[in-house]
Length: 340
Image (cartoon, rainbow, N blue to C red; front, side, top):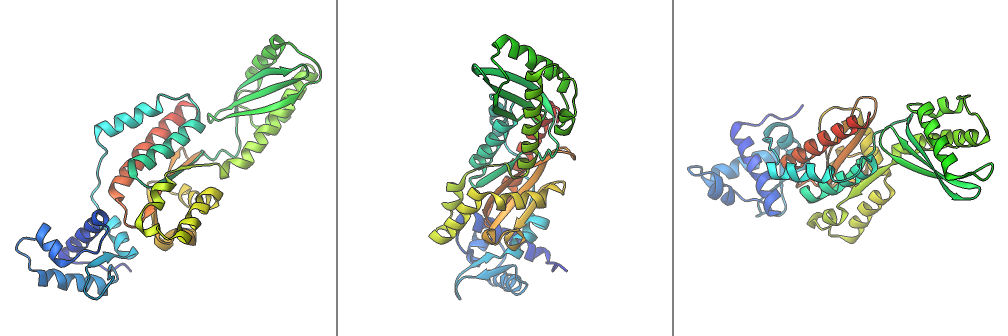
């Protein structure tokens, strides 16, 4: 059961969190009194700081130093004391403008979302594509490359674009390839891999080859989508003083490059509505035990992706949450426009 704090203890804890996040240093009673507590003696503040330490919400790095929040203290702050903030109108306008400057392609949108989250928050970020276990066709193109080869270009309903080189059963002019692409787009739009495999409307060997390769392509996409992750801002995260040691920085860098840790976080978050905050050992991976993760799903109930920010536990949670909520709502709207 979570320890309940008095009003004064809550006020002192909130001040310690805000000062430590800003200064990156232990916070002493003198600092709190000087900045925020006229009429409250340093002795009174010290007494409350001792109580907070006894309850496990703050610790002392040295005998005579100030206090820093523990993971438990940050959790209490996020759940009970943090006040919501909004992005400025200029920030929202800038983010919205960037998304509408690129093509209607979820791959590009997801990478841009990771970049925007990293830039605005100053931490690392990640974005997974909507988990569509059964992808559907939106549009098909065929482009001649050689006499007996062509590039199959498939736009899926979730907005991702995929290419595959085909060996053709003969030499075909581009006009014929365009005709087949138009017909298969009309016939197969909205169909899943197994439905395409079972489609019996192919009129000749060329259409049969395209149909079979299209079904195989969708099958591969369905298998890979869960591990498809975009990320950005690693250098910003590793520049934080908490991660200055080479071994720790290397472990975090590998976790992002290998992506499995990010997939594990997405699996935890995808089943919940609203913003999820994982602090310290709440993270599914031991590599992130000294980190905080703020993440949220986007999309709809059937095809949800996850966006997240990873930083030190000494994080501007209010601003990170506001940024995440805005970018997530924007991605949800764009995804809906694609028919997701």
